[in-house]
Image (cartoon, rainbow, N blue to C red; front, side):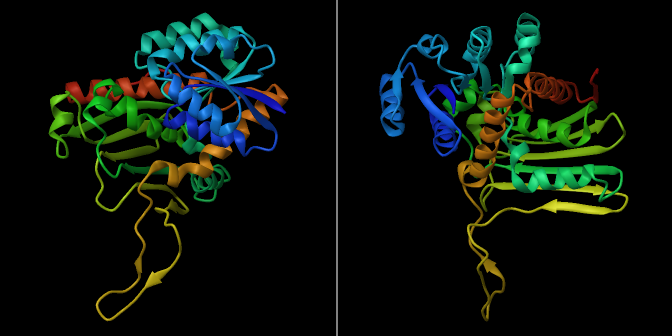
Length: 331
């Protein structure tokens, strides 16, 4: 059994705790959170040791790997301490909101970066993973266009927005990673944004909708469409278009039941309205990949460098939005 510790017992930490709990080859042995009630609740729920000091997790020699699901400003310090203690790390995205701090961390940990996995769970969504494998196998020929649509059901709270790092670093960063998953390296970023949803987001100096166009090193284009509001639920779609055809993933529904009547046809249940409902299988597959990497000693993917590359694209998108120009991205 791979023995894991969890740092951070908030919403996403509980998602990871559940993924560990149902994994046949993993054991959650210790959790911590500075909020004692949160640590106690998660510890009691999963029947594990709990506390408020991350040092108890990082200093436990019986723990093979650590999941860092704490607030973003703590990620660099915790993952650095963890890999130096000889542990593999699954770190939630982003590694940090400051690219210079991420670059400094990468230099500091050196080859130990191969022990770090970054939580871009959408790579493990069965539909997206299937499309990517079939594109790689040449089913649509040379990839020419990638379309990514990601819209949230409702805007987050003002308090969340204030510390999120902005739409590109908080929300679009998943889509930047997905674009790299398909296109490889990206060389150009052109971004535009709008404030059409929330006055609170505008007051915070952020945007609530965006369209970003990326150009891959081989010439393929990707477009990303984001919104902080979607009246019909959690809108998550992807389309890969090439010379021989197209592969697409539509929104998912709780069931396949449709109703047809005199005044309407093919009426379905609403789309999933929460990211946990939509991506639970992806989170569990992500954890399986991490556990397998710990067992084999292989470098997990997406790794530290993928997390850094996605943040580079977020920075480029912010610059493009500010200047109204296309931003070149170096290798």
